[in-house]
Length: 146
Image (cartoon, rainbow, N blue to C red; front, side, top):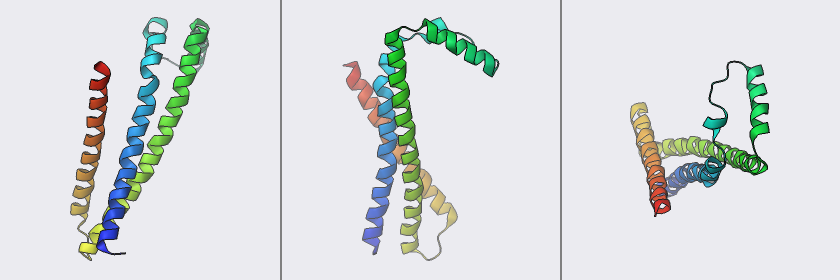
């Protein structure tokens, strides 16, 4: 594959890192407000768990204090949290593949790839990806505020 094809594959793989990470945020954000509106955890449970047995006992007491509507909201949140975790793993796989593809693009320009330059490029591309995600999150929050 030529330099153009390799570069396009590299860009596509960086997008396969960015958008699953953004989707994970959307999955969590979708139900967060609903959950926080229905359940006030600070009021119900305001201390750290000292030990697993105490944690399980307190968790059972917490479940007794929740209404059916709150339990349904908590179950929906846990489902979306699991989806978000899955999206994070997809993003991680995309990130690893994007790093590999970036290395291949660098090999097309030089037979000997400078390690520090490779690390710098990865850091810069990662920073751009995360900046894009943060900008999308802030834009969504501004739209929600309106």
